[in-house]
Image 1 (cartoon, rainbow, N blue to C red):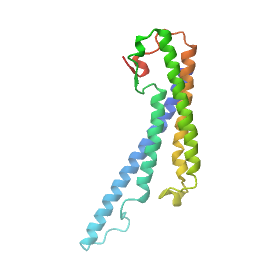
Image 2: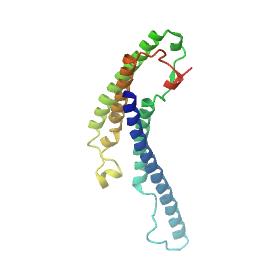
Image 3: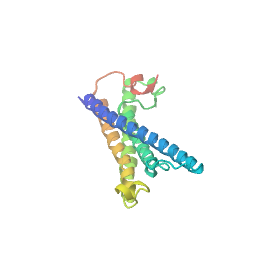
Image 4: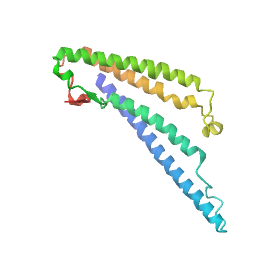
Length: 191
């Protein structure tokens, strides 16, 4: 039951990330096209040719900013997805030498450490950063659409919430399971 909910949540996050990456690629492509067309217009003007009025005169000021902001969100949410799917790096060579009960205890302690980290850094620290930056407008998008820098940094607590959900689910799995081997290559560890 817990595994199905984690998988569904990961799939939802993956779909959001796919859309965000698509928007990022289109945005960067638009920035490259507008930068090139601006160079072309300047080149034509230098030779006495009047360029078409509809051609952009340079890179749009907001395309680079959108790309940076999307990259922040994609990185943090992508990390949460990797954590939820247990695709993060884990070196369990020495832990694999212990007996099963010790492996289970070490896994639980590791998850508790991750939980503390997610709460303190991502949630508490992230909310502090969001609140402190809600008065600062984004340089290019702020005047146009009212985007505050706090909205950009909101990626920290959002990713933290997902990491906490996945960590609590993993702790419950470990505590409630009667399975023998806890560590395996499917859990992200190296055998």
